[in-house]
Length: 98
Length: 309
Image (tube, rainbow over all chains, first blue to last red; front, side, top):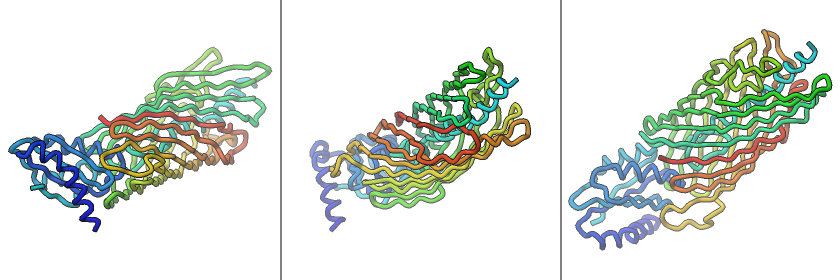
């Protein structure tokens, strides 16, 4: 039930992004350990430093990070995992929104 | 001669307060939702910096010695932190101080004061335990460093050499070590720290070593209910600081009017956003078991801001 709620939340966050730029790839990262606003900045900054990242949106309540790429760019799970680790947190799951 | 001895005595027994100011105010380096009077185990992202500026006013009085001593130490403590990697962080702490000691001796009221940069403290912290869960984390991080004698320790005024409690620096290299733990959730955060600073001799004076145990609870007052995105948090903060300092040594002799144990209770408030934090706290002494005529604390007030680069 919790997973379904999180998926719905991710979809709700993603809908406008997908509609705005259908050619861009978007990824959802579930980040463990994220529990305060100041921590969110480190995650945003680390993921934004990846080449091809257009936008990073954090939902602290659900520990969700939505990464939108520029057209044609992709994000690998390993790179996302490394960047989340660099920020001091743990990547639980990684998925690409079709 | 009598006057000179009175000055020295006043300076020695008040020295514990200088150590408290640096010890309590100097290690407060972290840049997360975090304690106000000490450090936290939360991470500094790899390759990233943060900066903190904390204004501290340390007021002491209630002199049992009959000298009617009144000491006020003001400091602007600058902290720079850097994440070497996700587990190792380095910190530098530099206070700008304004120290003032008033006392009555031989019927005269005199004031001794000094201002300028104090001693630079550098230390590293390594995250030994990290448990991340959805919406919460737990960390344990030992740390170690050293306080270097960058502050002036041979200041004089018209009455001669200033006592140690008024000097800007101790003149000694003083190692410090400890361990800090943090449990953080979306609703609250708990931090605990134990630390020890071994003070060494310089200019014939050796301040007593300082051992301290700190605890902090930060509870989210607003927003009451979390929505999406990254809202700012308003935390109510309550902290406790148990600080023990050994007796000073002057020219190899133990000073019976120095050192002791203090317990502070510290209510505070903290506003946390994604890029900056503003906070204020007041340390009130609830118990002071001091040796001889060592000077008591009235209060320590703190206001600070932190920034993520």
